[in-house]
Image (tube, rainbow, N blue to C red; front, side):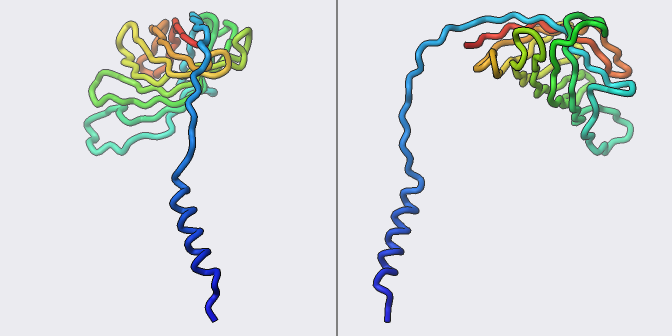
Length: 185
């Protein structure tokens, strides 16, 4: 004896599978939020040496040409302190965590940075902004793109103008001055 409900069940399943891709959405026009501009100034300590480095190599490419020494393809993980001033004794205001990749095949050192700058003190405690940008290290002043944020920097855009306060080209250790302009709500 054939089950009478089997064709109905199959038809029901087919209709539901076809409708699985259908969804409803409604666009809501947000109320106009006041735009804010925040200017930040701090120093980024990128330390590769010593007992407690803040930047370490996590991946290195296979070199097919032993005569060519290049950093191209090297990936670094960072947890760099952000300080009020360029001295090691300056107050720590936050940290920069993320990755950067050596992304130039030429002798010009260029990094591509994927970094979150988080603040751990003061009125910005718990807030951060994110940078996704190209950083041509040997240029005297560089501009990085601010592409987002959280906390007080929610929906952030902007830019960071940076310059080396100190750079040891042999070890890679550096203290970088950051002047950041952030547009946020």
